[in-house]
Image 1 (cartoon, one colour):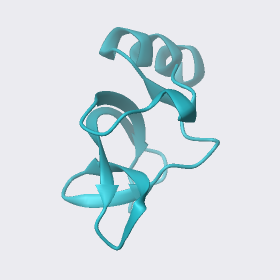
Image 2 (cartoon, one colour):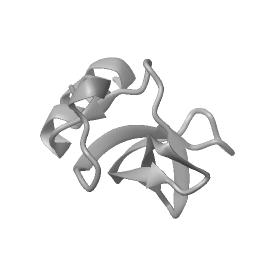
Image 3 (cartoon, helix red, strand yellow):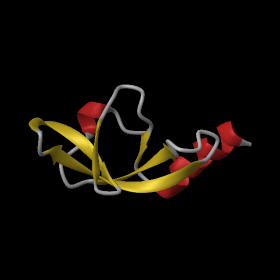
Image 4 (tube, helix red, strand yellow):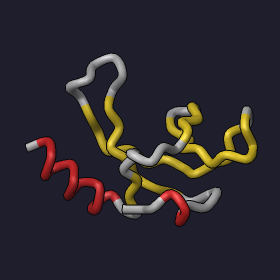
Length: 76
């Protein structure tokens, strides 16, 4: 899992994404680390054409397999 200070703009990462419309549904999604256009000094997760500010409790992974391992541990 990445620490926030290890992230770099343009990096491809994987996250466990919880569907905001159906809280019991989560998936592993690929996202890109990008500068938020509304706050260029802040890195964000670019997912589904939406910029999500990166927070301390976000689980950001280097690979799909790493994300899947944690997902399986907590979801099953």
